[in-house]
Image 1: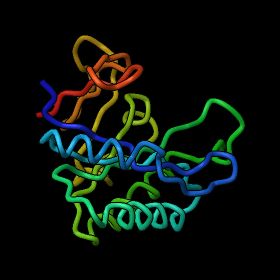
Image 2 (image 1 turned 90 degrees about the horizontal axis):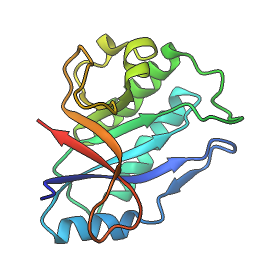
Image 3 (image 1 turned 45 degrees about the horizontal axis):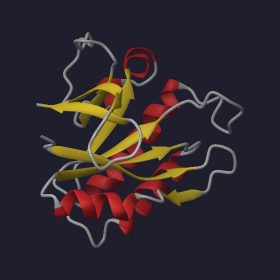
Image 4 (image 1 turned 30 degrees about the vertical axis):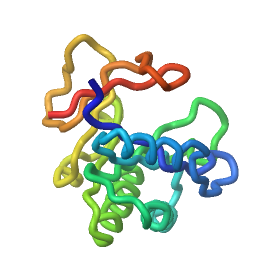
Amino acid sequence: GIDFAVIQLGYRGFSEGGLNLDEYFTHNIEGAQAAGIKVGVYFFSQAITVQEAVDEAEFVVSALNEYNIELPIYYDWEYIESEARTDSITGEEMTAFARAFCDKISEEGYAPGLYFSLRQGYSQYNLSQLDDLTFWLAEYNDEPTFIYAFDIWQYSASGVIDGIEGNVDLNIMW
């Protein structure tokens, strides 16, 4: 009953800022594609400059060079609940980082997208500067309440999928 998967490709460390490939990325993308599931990917950003966001996009494109994906590449920038190099980032900066990442992804021939929570969508990102992107909303409710259009709704972080250990995020795409 799984139609698609958006797999974490990698992340930037929140303390030192290094770029890292997710340790399960290769296993997850190859397994999903072998099962005939449509695949997209996301990168968990902790960029603190526009150049770091561009570097992240280049990292993603380089890691995808042997895979064909059908869904967008999503930019996922989140505040960390501990001391992080990103603690003082503003919504204006987040918007600029997302724009830079997604523009680079688009230049490389991929569809870009943006993952965000309700709080980010309403009070941090300037979505009018990003409205050409595919939006992936995280809102854990019985029904979404977000008043703007979005393409994927992440409605749970505690799903169970056969063959995957631990909880998984559950999403609906329209």
